[in-house]
Image (cartoon, rainbow, N blue to C red; front, side, top):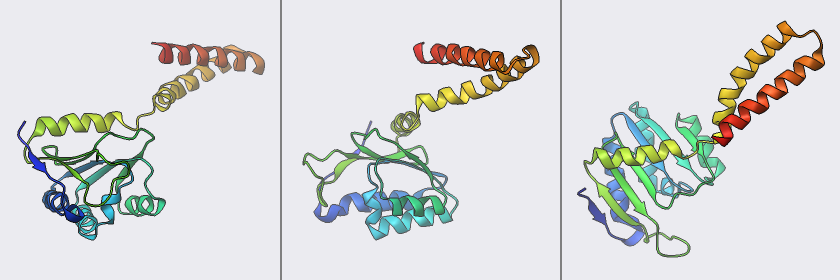
Length: 189
């Protein structure tokens, strides 16, 4: 896996140049895994992201604790957002499933401008796909997945219970028993 090391620089200039170049080159997809999305406060990165969206590039973002004003704006311009509680060790930018930047965790308690460093993979689809897989796992709530499965099954069970039983108590009891069995099956396996 060949990559270009991104060294620390004043005001994160090297990092920002690479990220801007990648955002400007995006043709169909941008995937971002970050914490607070603080890089979007740099005007040139914000402008490049907006221009990519205007070009029809799909933008998917996973973030932890982003400011609400940034969230509202990102939603309004068409970004797909996943807000999670699991803070990723590093932050990632993937362009068109082939190029990526890994912003590695700073070795300071509170990251500051100028402490950002990492790796740039100019053309490495396998590394990009590894990060895409991480993106797909982040923000997926197992309980939400379970509810997507249980809800349709419960509608069927409720419908059948209504057909079979006459009393509302029997219908509710049957539905609760079946829901418990389904819930136990999917959470314990």
